[in-house]
Image 1 (cartoon, rainbow, N blue to C red):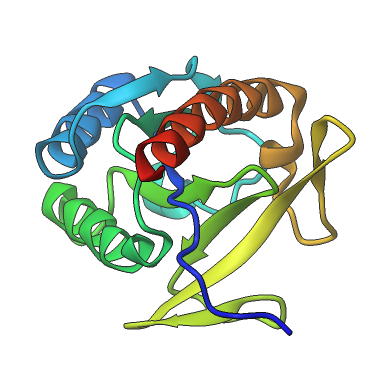
Image 2: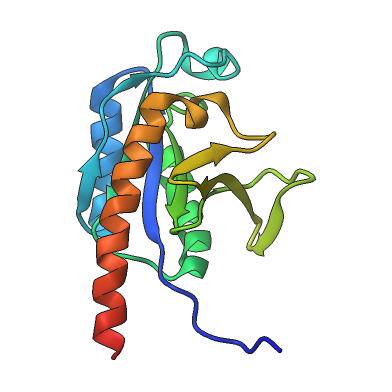
Length: 180
């Protein structure tokens, strides 16, 4: 029989995209003022897998994945999603966002994204936030699922996520050692 136990903390990361790198930097500064410093900042990627956001943001978007030093309790992702939304609103101009911030977290076995949008494969977490297992870790790598966004499955993104996971694995060991 299973029994309740405290889940492992998670490695917080965000995806930030915008029409220019300076807006990503500004959003990251704002996030760090609440969440603490980042520990890994991936390279700037073109955000070109979809044109869905073009009417709001314009063309030629760029994206960066960033993880944070401090591990979080998994349920803390809900208020972090609200923080991201608040920052997006603060940085908006004339009713249009200039930056998109998508928080998520990494565990040894999966990568989770959160959203305000319900869908068949998403679970309600509370306060209007839904969680989605976006990638699973199997046989030494992250694997896409049928609903995984193509850019999250790209080799470039996978390389960043593997670095985040490696750092998380070390941090998790230290966390477990501290519990002993």
